[in-house]
Image (cartoon, rainbow, N blue to C red; front, side, top):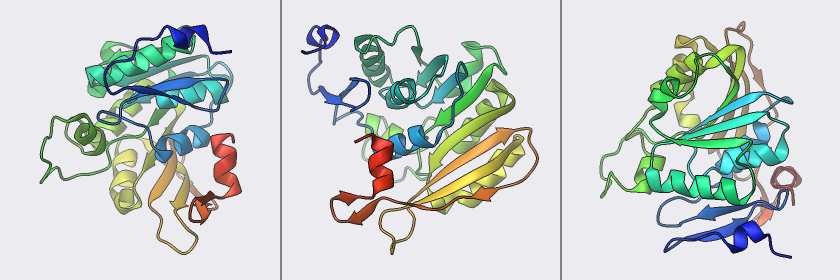
Length: 251
């Protein structure tokens, strides 16, 4: 039987709903504005959230990470911040249709202004799937939702690290997914704000290819000690995921 919340949801032009294969949850997407990728799913599987903890998701997009964390963890409350109004609206409608409004709230705001909406130092966990690309040169429309999601147009990694350090409690945990080619800068920026890298996992599309993603946990105010974990391989062969990927997706 179809969920009555979703039968009454109003979709805008170009939007669709996709099944997340978790707790019956679905999500609104628009290919012309924002669709989540594997990086968000991997981050939701990498983030460790204890029962009752408060979570803040930066650069939330259409709410994919808050909704997956609500499905996978016993987090107490999850807040998400997304700067693009249309994308934040998709997230809010998905949260409402999944009957998650008591656990998740989505704020349409600049992540740099998070302290205007929440008290500093109250979050146990922060997650972020930030824009990866540094140079916006050559983008035909820097105001397009896809460009803003992928390129450091409205925020950069320094902004992410700075606000994370401000909003986390001492010992709180920041979980990131990013690109390996920026690892040196990422580590330098994290430590500048007292966020010590604690775990790192490289993600390889195939076992014989170079890594194209990296998952990182950094803790606020902890001593320096980094564990480099076993790498994650995405595909066994074309169109065939490894068992670990199937487990993360929940298939």
